[in-house]
Length: 129
Image (tube, rainbow, N blue to C red):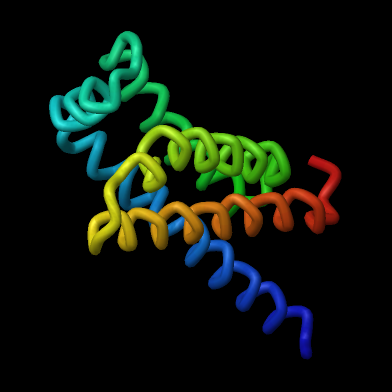
């Protein structure tokens, strides 16, 4: 595979990996009161601060990953965020059996997969910065 094709496919893969975080960050930015309400819904302290930090992390770390500028740091940041958010928002084991529990369990394990993918990005990035 040519270096140009490899770069293009890498960018497409990274864009796919970051897509939910770009979409989520932009949606929260456009509907900041909704982002604050979401943080409050999960019982997080200082919901306005948590919402602002979430927006900054989702958009900033995604930009770092896509641009290659401190890609490892951005990937590790989104990995940690994804693990924390998953443990807060997808506690399927607390639900009674049924479709809601099934769907939340799927989401939980899908997010673990995303966290693993970000770890792989961090481990396999050959850039120094």
